[in-house]
Image (cartoon, rainbow, N blue to C red; front, side):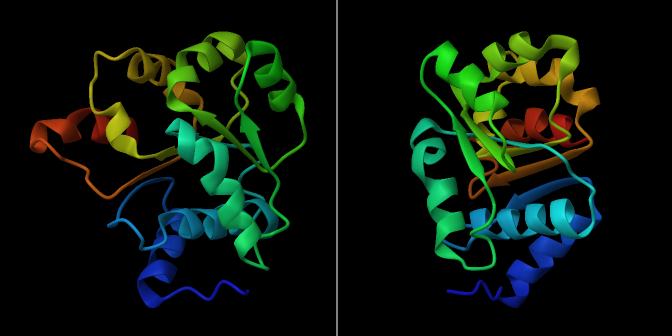
Length: 177
C-alpha cells in the first residue's frame, strides 16, 4: 500500500524536513510514526541530510511498531529498521549492523550514551513518546543531555505533551531548544 499523507501529515513531514528541532504533538492514531518515517526517508535518500537516525521508544513500541509501520507502506518498505534490544552483546551487534533507523528502548539510553561516549554516531534522534523525558533529573534525560550538542536533528513525538501540567514540558522543550 502506498503512503499518501493527509494534508496535516504532509505538513508534519515538511516541518521535520525543514526544521532541525520539531515537536510533533498529535493524538494517538494520527500517524506520527509514518510521518516520521517519510521525513527520515526524504532526509536520508533525497536530501542526504541525515546519515544515522536513532529512535528512542518504549520497549513494546521499539520491538514491533517501527518495523511493522515501515513494512506497511510500499514507499517506506526499503527503510532498514534495526532493533537495538536484548543483552549488551546483542545490542552492540545491532548497532554495528547496516541500517537506516536504529530503535532502542528508553531504559537503555544511559547505556548507549556510555557505550559511545565521545563517538556519538547519530545525527538525528527521534523521541517516541517524549513524555518519557519530562523529568530533568532522570538518568535517561541526563544521559541524552550529555550528547545533545552532537545531535543535529531532534524530533519529539507524543499525543500527551503535558499530562500533569505545563511543568512536564520544561525538559522536553529543553531538549528541543
